[in-house]
Length: 242
Length: 242
DNA sequence: CGGTTGGTTGATGCAAGTCAACTACGGTGG
DNA sequence: CCACCGTAGTTGACTTGCATCAACCAACCG
Image (cartoon, rainbow over all chains, first blue to last red; front, side, top):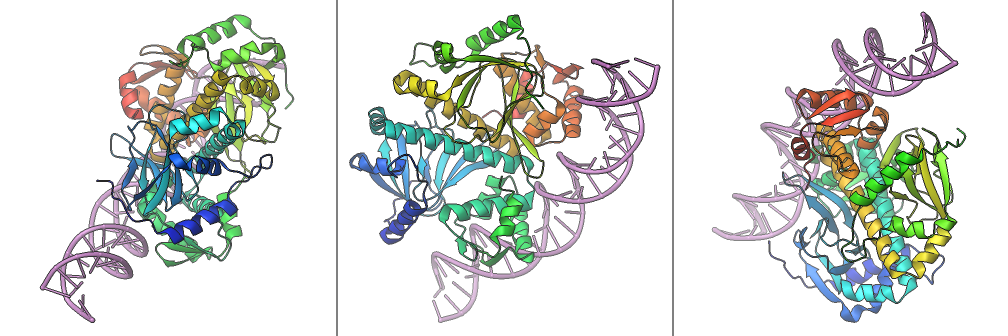
């Protein structure tokens, strides 16, 4: 599959970015600048790319010499096993960063779930920025720690939870990340297959479980790619947020 | 459960440490010093502690103001959920480090699986060391990245693998970490319950799967806490090491 | 030497996987 | 503009791997 370039739809991109900026993590000790903001400061070195839905952004065996900031769209970070099994480490949303792990070879590949616009920076430029700036270094540590925490939280989902709870956890986290509240309409950019590969379930189970949640009133499903969060409290209880 | 102090058995501790040092991760770019080695350099600030089997080392809600280096024994990093479910993030072996994530509150608690000796350092002393030393900073980043990678690898185990494969993955990783080879005898310090909580299986399934692996010749089980690795190749294939 | 704890083994049930049919939708071409 | 097709999602019938419940066993310890 070749990498296809799309023209960026700039209005939604800006809206998405702003939403992240408002809802994004804020560090009390710093001047409210995020790592993504610091990346913007070296934007001169950054290149804007566009990828069409389902096209690869980078591969598992590519050298890890770039850092990315998602501008718009949804990305899946996934890993293919020799026998064809796939698991999705995480989905990345506008404002999220990729490629900041300190490993020579990439642990996963990235693919565009929807049409995606992102900015890439040479790893070297970022390292240089970090080397001379302790604020950036501490944000980087915090970023890595948060990513680790997220992964460990997901270990609980996969290790202990049943289908209903996994789907609830997924919906709650997605809602929190995009800033959706009770009653809001949540966009599911990814396919049932994607969700299944992220939660360790099959497409059928994902589908069945969603309709079951509709049956018990926690959600509405106006169409396959939108969910209305009717009862966030119930979902949070299911997700067993610690 | 009170924290009990045991006298450290120093001979095994030294042996375990040496084994780690030989088998431990080596950074081609650096002078072969590990983060644990750097910690030793501020050992003046470190305090040696001993914990008896099954006693807590720190709790989920403790402040994250200490960094630890395991000297001897096995530690489980685990998390208890409100409803009593437990999942074990990972087991830590001699030479491993704990408490290096950059989060105000601890994401998990640590308990001694066996009698444990460890050295703790004030987080502040470590941060001071890192602040003035780019070598240490890069090792810290690498450490965090590796931890993240391990967690993500485990996501695959929990998300995609069946019981046989999970047990195989567990044995292979443990063998690699302690430097055990084909034919060697591997000590399982942890209980079946611990293994189950780490792999998302029940005690019974862990037990059954181990006997099944004995039945097909991959392992021998001289006693409940030792495994002879008869066919590492077969185990690695089961584990589907990418 | 009984009691306790941790591990194994067996019988049974159930949640989720598998296989398969059907439906809804979005794009394309007549 | 509509008919067609391909893809993605839903639903149903059946299977199965693991959990559950329960009995049993072995090691350890007072």
